[in-house]
Length: 596
Image (cartoon, rainbow, N blue to C red; front, side, top):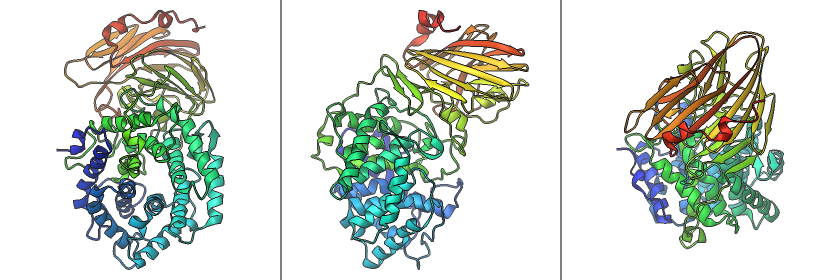
């Protein structure tokens, strides 16, 4: 059961085309009578089910549109269903009409792919519709020019719609378009980096701002050459930094919000190829490996229902980690990764052999506010973050403010702040006033991203200041916290959360100076260098970790009297290093000279 895409080798354009079909075919029986809506589940979102059903219908179009543009024959029977759905969905007289939108409406998000369809495949997508349906589609989409939206990546949705209007010779709002371009520029920081809503830096830089800009450049190069060239230039700048977020096989870093979009992680490279933005330093083969390698990793995971529908979650189905705007069809935003199917079979991208990008062992990324490192064999990427904070989304402290994020271990989100097992405080220093309710880092008063360290100053409570510095050493890292407190505190320093289940039984180590979990599939350990008095292995609540439903969490604990304390630890996590490396930490870790 599940989806047969898990057996797809994903090496060629034909494989990728077949993968798109394999993902969309299970949805066809679930289309509504008028084909304009998809009901994929009973979970709720911040918008009503009728809008969630429209969203679920729209998101597969991110693959259908490039398949139409690229002349993929297998899309024709699929397109027949979605074409009928569009005709009915934009018809005000039809019972499945998508309706009149409001300010900040989710349907404004879904309009973007229709604009892309009009721009990338005008004859097949727009002009194949009956004349009445063409007028209805324009009228329904034009609502986006008359409503407010968040001042973030959403602005590009209106750009794509007006771009589609231009290509198809329909009226468009030129004045609004220029204002939107100006707003987008306010979000560009330089060096290829954009920030999103509330000054956030995460995947939205790559799978949103860059993706849409590169699609625009592909379509508008002849009409708007200067802006298109600039979007391509920025994409080329981004390519190398972003490649550091992937391990050698294509596994990407779990970090930030909207992670249920899963293999949208590679969509940037599909758009980079679409815009023909190859350079000698970053080739089509590298783009191809990052795109297809990431998809291969995803399709090997249990992310589908028994009938082959994508679920909400990350490494497995889970509602706990989801945002309020994640409805049952939201995961199909990942279909953006099929943008490269707009390129023909004989394009150099498809002819290229996959090629690994030789990422540096340490990449300082000040715009992302992180130091990104990788193990010597490339099997483990670690990102040490500070200073990036989100607002208004669930589990922000877990998604942005852990000390380190890992392609091997993912990260955990809390079920409750009471008790360590509920909090699942991996890669956090959690502090408590009563020994029951814990508070990790949430918001940095100051932060610094150095060449060999990340530091921050934060306040878990009034009257308590923590100065944290982290020094990476391969798959080890040293954490040093100076804690100034005016009251008694209880401290818990968590390492990586290791999967509890596998072929074998994990060994647990709980000693005064260390805690560890050792298994055939990985090792996680924390060693006390100063200040801690006990090592324990916490058994977090199930389904708290993004990668594994059940985990083991090595943790150091201490009781702190009022005053100033130095807490220092060495943290280790590996898939390939084994038990021996845990027993023999590097000299520079054990004799760290910066404990001051």
